[in-house]
Length: 90
Image (cartoon, rainbow, N blue to C red; front, side):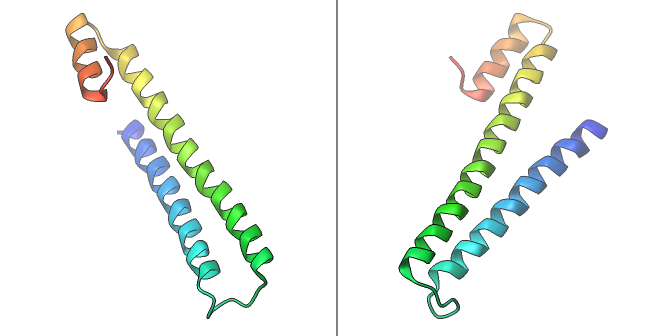
């Protein structure tokens, strides 16, 4: 149960950060709420894009760690094949 709680907390944290970054992006692209030059707007969009890329990379890394953990726990060739099918690994 602790392991599932940890997994849930990590996914929830990544999702919360992603939502926060998307909210910031919406404020930046909505010219009625924020007064700034096009250069400032593009710079801010670039910084937000880097954060979103970081969220995505964190998600991929965490998923890969969980996949490796699943494989390390498989006890038979049938378990391993089932995991490969589940994760689309051929």
